Amino acid sequence: MSDAKRIAKNIALVVGGGTFRAVLMPLFTFLIARKLGTENFGKYSFALSLAYVLVILGEMGLPKMVVRELATHKEDVNKYIGDMTILRLITGLASMGVIIIIIEINSRTADSRLPLFLIGLSFLVFTGLRRFFDAIFQAFEVMKYQALVDMVDILLTFGVGTALLFNGYGLMGVAFAMMAGATISMALDFIILTRKLGKPKFTFDWAFWRKMALGALPFGIIGLITFLFGYTSTVVVSLVKDNHQAGLFSSAYRLIMAVTIIPATCMTVIFPFLTRIGSHSPSRYREVVRLLVKYLSCLSIPISGLIVIEATQLISSFYGRAYVEARPALWILAAIPLFSFIYIPLIDLLNAHYKQKLNVIAILMSAAINITLCFILSPLFGFVGAAISTLVAEGFLFIIMLFFSWKHMKIHPRHFNNWKPLLATVAAFCTCLPLRNMLPFFPVLITYFLLYAAVLLALRTFDVRDISLFKSLLPNKATY
Image (tube, rainbow, N blue to C red; front, side, top):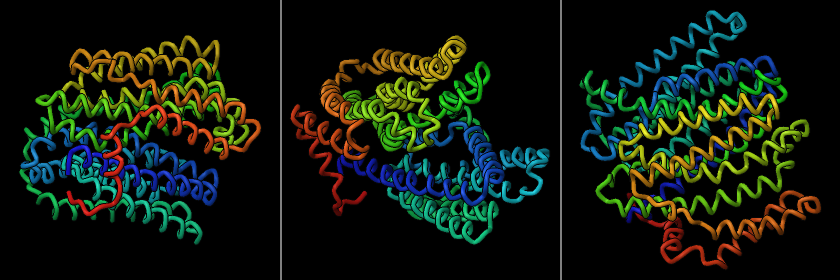
């Protein structure tokens, strides 16, 4: 199977699994909120949020480092499975120590210590190990195993959790369901990994651990800053204005961040390929990036247009009519996908070629601009000022990533001249804008994308190679 078709297949698998998770897990959260009540749902949210932050801190970029190194040294897979499993287990258990201390000193969790402990354990140890095992699958570009185990994890967590919630087991039932999904899926990952790719070789190589930890540190910094990027604006607005303003900004920002899952998912698949071809085939990685940006632009531009048209409907559907006031922020933030769908691939391109320090510089500068502008604009314009500062920071990150990719990877900005999806979006936007107050949401949505697709095809946006890639997504008997 060609590289292009392999990548297309893997993207389809990962996106399919991601869509499955995106449907069931929010539904599970809704059921938890309804069945547990405000107080217990708050405890659950506290434990989950704390565990998620500690997962990021505990792994500090190790999965990305494993993908990059192992993609070009697959013969060392046994050592990676053995030694890195031990290292990840140690960091997971250390993070669990933090969870235990916080639970013990927080008197409000006295009656729910065991379920909160189990939620932390499922995330920090078992899910943490799974993220490492999945990194090895990504390095070998065999996403079918990751997608399969993801579905098992989601179905177990959702099925067991729903059954226990409806039978009155409350927070303990949720914790048990999360433990069941995390432990069984981790065990499946490990079994598939050791049978298909290699047996663990435990050498307890301290020099290897140190090399991996230090090499992963820039990836960890990037991940942590990116995770905190939008939350910083929310905190600033809350400090200089009030929680109401912060809530309005956060509601709009979270909708936009949900969209960035698309390029992030694609890069999960493409990153090992970029690492494998290295810097010895500049024409190949330039072509991959060009095609990727082309396809992502065909998604990001119409998505931004649709968000502007249906801002009111989107906010009220997800958050209720009380949040419709956040429309101005959503209109401003709707431009972010135009930037993020391009700079995310460029960030991973530099990561693949051992230039992650440039990414750290770019993201730190963008975060500094965001915080500075937010402190200036939020007192004047509230949540709208925070939206403006976030958009300016994202635009700056886009520009500096274009500059770094041009200077260090010789990718000229002309590769990103995607005027055809822009023209198709303008045509769909101008047609559907007057219809938003005349027709329900779904007819407008269907009209918008049908018209967009028609103009896109009329402009002959896709050539023979594109069509061949699309056909490769159809089921066949190809093997990896």
